[in-house]
Amino acid sequence: MQNQKDPLTSSNDDLIAENNLLKVKLQLEHGMLMENGSTLSPDVENQWLKSVYAFEQQYKDAKKTRLYDRIGRPAIKKLDELTAAAIPAELQRLRVLMENNGIELDCICEYDDAVIYKFLTEELFEREMDDISVPGMVYHFIYEEFHPNHDYDLRRHAHDFVKAIFTRQWKDEFDGMFFARTVNFSGRAYERRGMSAIVNAFQDVHRPLVVDTFEIDKVGLDPGNTSAEVTAHLSASGKTKRGDAVRYEGACCFHSVWENDYWYIDSFLLPGINR
Image 1 (tube, one colour):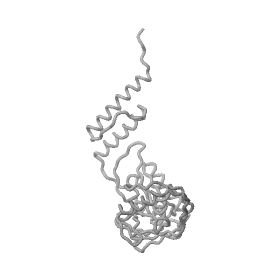
Image 2 (tube, one colour; image 1 turned 30 degrees about the vertical axis):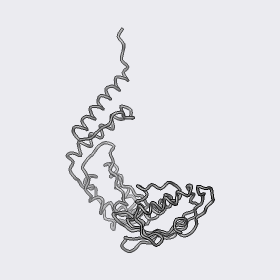
Image 3 (cartoon, one colour; image 1 turned 90 degrees about the vertical axis):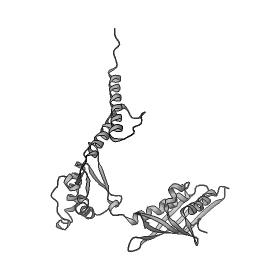
Image 4 (cartoon, helix red, strand yellow; image 1 turned 60 degrees about the vertical axis):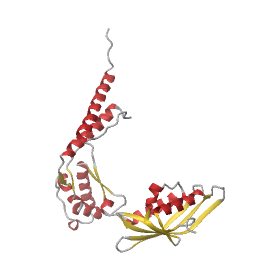
């Protein structure tokens, strides 16, 4: 009697062969270098490769379309034509239309429904996008990329900066980007590399510290949103590498400048670092 081949094994062999063919086509037709030895199962990898190939095929010849056209040009009322009570339902209707057409708007912070409705109908719907439709693919837009929330960004920036200095190892190539090109510190001007050296020197004599409290008191922005100041209160404790107990407590101040769509610290006062 001849041995019968396991149907499951045969199916997997067919999928592996098809996957290899898709990888070759992606490389030859679209210049994508696809590595072998995927950790995905053959069927999951097959679905992924098909999606990538379908996207690349459409993208090659894709035209542009307005987002409003993409969702079917629905009837829309201007914001001032709606009562406050009617806005939430109208906004939800538009969000459902967007989701049904593979488009979503994400917001990092919370905003009034009227703000988002106005943004969608007067700004985002006029934006052009690639006219590509692949099953399961979703275009994500982020509200804050159009309208930065400076108060949120500055607060988060201050928290992350304090955490990087007190609770974990400072990474020059990454954390150095907190700083502006020139930083005024303790009456002197330093470049980024010099400021990173000061932080590293502080960490060299301490074990990772615990930030017991970090409370922001005020975020102040200049009228043109080009510079800002965050004031706060810090309490941090722990030990030096020799085993001595330490506590750093007091007022903090972070002055930042807005450059290239990002906030950079150009001077600061921080207990334990400034002496």
